[in-house]
Image (tube, rainbow, N blue to C red; front, side):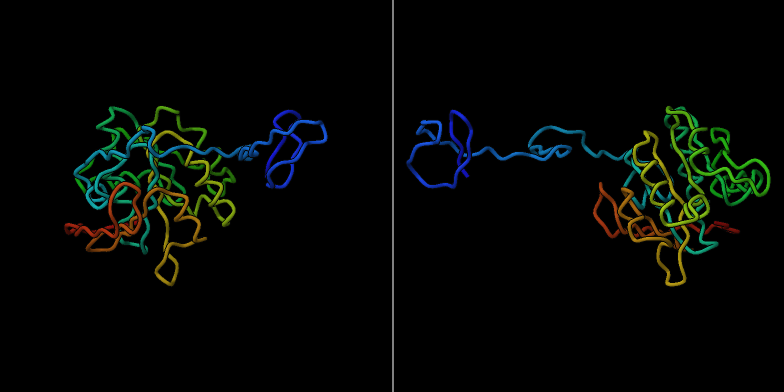
Length: 240
């Protein structure tokens, strides 16, 4: 498509001829990017995805952790999902000299506290965020408001308990995606041995790790090659 260089009237791309305004100079119509869309060169320098390495099993499986990104941690009941999240969350909070926030919809204060000694981790930098009173209707939106912007790490336990419907799970993951802290999201498995909930949950995070009794499998990771598998040391009495 061409346009008149004077009045910008458009015409089909044939040579020669005069425009209705009398001009005879035609130029290509510039490609217009729709509003809300950004086109950028990949040659421009950007922030690299440089992982920070921790001695935690999840960190080893992921090839380190890019601070600020989001990880979905799944597995069957009793596989140790929460235990390994507790280990990594404690180390992230310690390394950043900050606080971690555990959004608990699964257990209670004592049960969450007991997750840490299993990996010789300390809970002293972790703050528990939970519903007040049995049967409370308080949801994840209120829970996230209790987390300050300078939090070092957030653990959501679990995605299915905080987001009862597929729509709510998607909304929760979208809200977490724009938050600054590193986020570990505990997810249950369905009867088919896959992440429970819509397939989109796995696309809404930066990495996915599957916790099994003897190993951790990473099936998606934006900063390291996949699949990756790391063997777990023996841990007794895991509860996820």
